[in-house]
Length: 148
Image 1: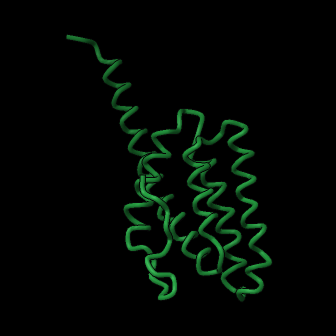
Image 2 (image 1 turned 60 degrees about the vertical axis):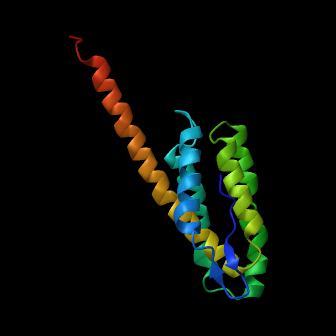
């Protein structure tokens, strides 16, 4: 599994070139495959993404000092992930995903990269969600067909 490293070179503000593609795809596939029928539902994952978007709306106009005031509330997403994990709504893989991402967030620029990474992840997650639904539907149709 790919490690989550936001930056190729943070001083030059060079984002890891594989972050929004290969890394996001690998994590989305792993989390989708680990989730059983009642875990890692897209609606549950979307709640966390929506919260990141909520903070992004506040962060995009904030200077670095005001971002640092928001950072503890952003990091509180971790507690919400633990709550969801305690209720068996998410798997350890999703918990690990959020933990690794939040560990990377220290500055406003880090948070912007996190938001974009999560967006890429959600795109791949939706793809794997639909792929799994299609496969399940095809499998059920095969089971219901009379055997020859």
